[in-house]
Amino acid sequence: MSTPARLPFARSERSTVGLEWELALVDTDSGDLRQTAGTVLEALAPDGDHPRFKSEFLRNTVEVVSGVSRTVGEAGADLQRSVEEIRRITDPQRVELMCAGTHPFASWEAQKVTDKDRYTRIIDRTQFWGRQLLIYGLHVHVGVEDRAKALPLLAGLLPYVPHLQALSASSPYWGGVDTGYASTRTLLFQQIPTAGLPYQFDSWEELEAYAGDMLHVGVVDQFNEIHWDIRPSPTYGTLEVRVCDGPTNLAELLALAALVHCLVEHLSTQLDHGRTLPTMPHWFVRENKWRAARYGMEAIVITDADGEEELVTDSVGKLLVELEPVAERLGCSAELAGVRDILRSGASYQRQRAMAARHDGDLEAVVHGLVAEMRAGRPLG
Image (cartoon, rainbow, N blue to C red; front, top):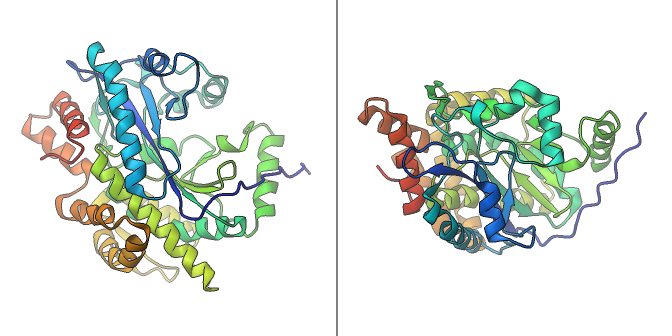
């Protein structure tokens, strides 16, 4: 039997928030991906690593990272400053910033992997499926003040995976094809063995035993190579929610981040009151994930362990009412209200399909629409 891994959980202030946004670099004229992340990052940080700008799996991607913030608005303003700083480098190069769960038409075969040992190991192990990970996401970290809360909060968040996935769905196209899915990214990412839905552990010791096993048999070299949709982040003392497709604009990013922020705080308060958080069997959680990826805002989701079902948009509407007092306490009422805008106007995957229809299926037009939304900081059309 392998030795359990020690996963000390860093001290973190409750319900602080940090955001990570993966941005694609695209050609201003063609809309195709550009492999220029290395030169962009070197210009931003000539002396080495920068805390707000990170390389990613592929050379067409730059990740912007907020500082530890008290509010979603503060973290969003941090990201916006970083985007503006990147633009000072990319605009003269005729490179635009874009985000969506996938690039609508770029060829995965043409993409180059960032020269880092961890990414080389992923490709070496996952081969065909690993090379197809032409995807972009949003990661939301929320501070957890007590390690004992981390795993109950993780399990308590799993019933809301389809809500977050449907609202953020922005990847109907992949490789120039309409896949029929609202979130193709969801299905692509779970092809690698360390990604997908997390296990539901009863204790931190069980998690350490699992991590020890994965390290022992060589599945991972460190814990952060486990890419679950929701995972504890011991290094930062946070719960990291990685469910969402990449938002195409800052306004929707803030709405999604506020929803995550409020959910974690709401569930944490329930634990404070000695309540057991409602959970669902793994098979229901898995089915919900597939339904939201396939049908997006039209998904009928399972809402409890008894198998009750409801249209996801109706379920989100009720959830927003429940979370309004939490949002007021966290100072993100305006951002949370942005979720209602998504309910009224639709998610990104719907706008992308509408854009393609208006341009006779031209996916270059879709990319230019995504670029315009990034520039505007809000949904367009």
